Image (cartoon, rainbow, N blue to C red; front, side):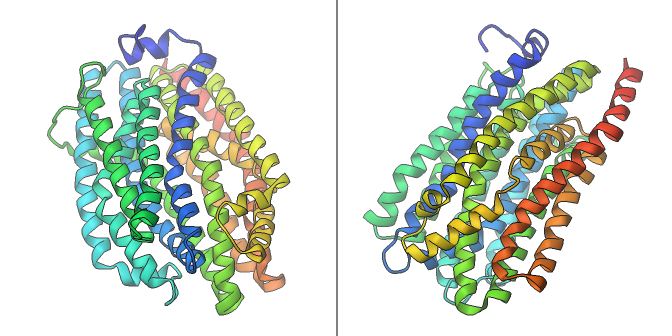
Length: 458
């Protein structure tokens, strides 16, 4: 950033290809380290003697609701950062400054409400998520401690989007790395050294999230950032626009978590008391592996989102098309390489989380079934997230909803005709068909409308 004094300089004076690499790769690496939160927690918890598997399944039960909480951070962060970049593209710097201040107030307010509500309703919430009586003591402990750190989690993740949007991809990556490394260090100390078990895993995560929040706040308040975080009175029209743009990310996350909940409930229902718990352990391993796919891919799209937002505000259609190609290629290379590795070595991934040979074998088969069409995720992220960055929710929503509705249909239909283990094919079916649908709709319907709109804007 030393050669660029403003965000406008960065986005105007670089080629699209170099911008995708400059912003996308550090954000991807940052998100790769971000997944260490859940991955490291689950690896250490899964290796706890005697009760490792049931404790791991308990964290898997908590995961959908905890990710849903984080969705508020992305709603405000992505919505606010996209709106800020659009404003800069329109040369409205004053509004851009108000947006970041309003986003901070929204994150604080949402954090307080979410913390109070979820702590008061934790037992019914956990059982609604598919928790069994054996899992509940572990799930309750992990959930309670994690929710107490909501304000740090939402502020760290949400405000980090404003660093990325201003071209500070390296600083955004460093914020996540500091937090992830701290979590990796604290996990064995608290879980084994202090014999805290799942409580230690949750405490390590909360402390690490606090470190990220402090780092991001200090950076955004410094004079090195073009659009600084300063107090601005909450304005309804700005808050409404932030939530409007960010609602797509929020809705997608909620639907993703609904899918995980439905999958766990179906596995428990059709698998029975013993096999059901074993399959939920497998599903937890699969979802842990999917974070390795999804989070870095989301890092690419969120890091590059400011390219789309800014050039949409400036009316540059050709640059937006170039950016779509660049983001898809970068996501495709990453996810394609992962798909090959996962299909060739599923036992290696399963063995990271599990000790029992039978469960490792079962989880490896589940992983293979789930990831046959993984490359389709690259299409979804490149199209849905970048349309969202431009505020085109009416275009992005159908692309995402189709894939998720298809997944839910598979959850209800597959066990009626096939063995319960075949439920894991739902991921591959929805990824493959969903990507095909998205490409057809984009090229024949969305792109022509976008081109016409931007041509009229100039």
